Length: 162
Image (cartoon, rainbow, N blue to C red; front, side, top):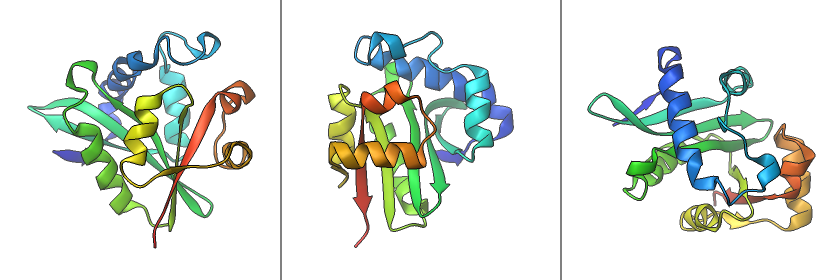
């Protein structure tokens, strides 16, 4: 079942993010990896910045999460994570489809690590296309609030409704 994440879900949300992020350890640059991958303060900052999370829940346990954030004239998909032992079971697909239907803009953007080839393929399977390196830099600086090193080591994929 997909449902909106509530303030009372904060600890479960943080747990899913940090568990699911283990897939990136050794893939993203070592200088960008830390443990926990996302701190409680960082997550609070994302929520305050307008990221709304939705989660996949089974038997009262949160197994996957994905955020959506309207920014100016576009919609960002943010922080997509599934608990390690549940990856590959279609949870991410169902969450992405749900959020794509919720997006109110003709354009949806998602950023991910350049070396996370499985994540890039995942989004490409749903009609997202990689933007050029120059466009990626411009988009990341305009719509995201991330360190310059992350801009250098990330990609952006775009989905445009027709």
